[in-house]
Length: 447
Ligand code: PA5
Image 1: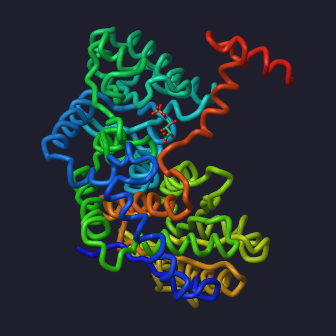
Image 2: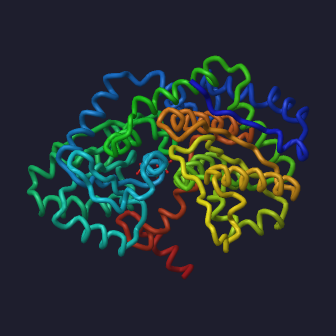
Image 3: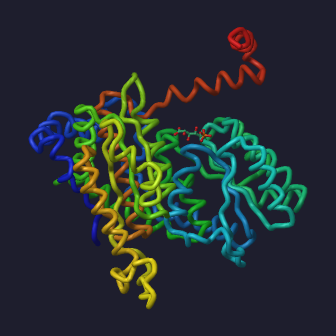
């Protein structure tokens, strides 16, 4: 099977091959060794490293069986979670789904996956509940800690609605909880209510959890082949963790750190395929939460081209020269569409009549790359043969392993996220959560 590829030719006017190779030997290879030997910081969160290899077939079969139960009983399944308990499933489903899936009716045995708990939008929740009135729906509630406010609010509302619509007993059959093995409010609730549960292992952090039931169950409910997804990830694990020759994870991690050291402080993940929009969101969390600490870290941004060439294009071409791009280039689209000829040719497009739309897209990509490199924006290119479960699995594992290596090159602990707590404690203090009395007084004094 083909593999995804990394091409760094278009960074070499900013950093040299020698610099990249020197940093690869001095920092990336030791970083990979630290990950493999479990001797680096955050080593209690390395469960994701060999997860594709260690995921037994029967575990995937169990996830598929539970997904099929939901598929057979529900027209809509709401996946409730935030951050790492949301973005992986959303990214994979959006990458594989028909772009107009949301506008077509749910068919028996083929439910739509909706998402909640990823925001505190009152209108969002109101409109979701209105939509679900009289609909056959189920819930996957996902929270590793079991105490996160956003999904807890959404789940409380949806659970109440489902119980009112179908009764407590039937609701209990249509709710699946994915949480810690023992700790947290969600575990206790699931035990008390008798929900089907899956465990998020202690040693897999939220943003690295897409290949656990956290991502796999919603993806399977949406009708995609999670065995192929895990197989793709395993192929990448074999290539970059187990064998390690011409290691594309080391290459990507090293190159982005060389660029960072050369003053390129922001990395823009670019796609030329709108199906990858949420993949960019997943990637932003993976790199932002892993690397942005100790007052260091490349700022991860993402754009959809060519759409955003008409909004962000000016800044990227001509703004402050502190950015580099990483382009995910999908080699083959799933469908063919040629541009028709037109006798009047008022739009002047006949010069491309007969060409495929994707050919034009590829020229937009090439033209943009040349313009941006000429304008001082180095470009890393990741080619993906096509958008399938296998290649998405490869891409997920590629970015995860590269992230671990890159975090160690940067000399941070890539597996914690202490900065995420600051807003939560302020919010709890402002909402007068029991236990936060002193913090409430302190924050009120600042207002
Ligand atoms: O990566 C992380 O750890 C976070 O983004 C979490 O996934 C997010 O905060 C949700 O946490 P939980 O699954 O505990 O509700």
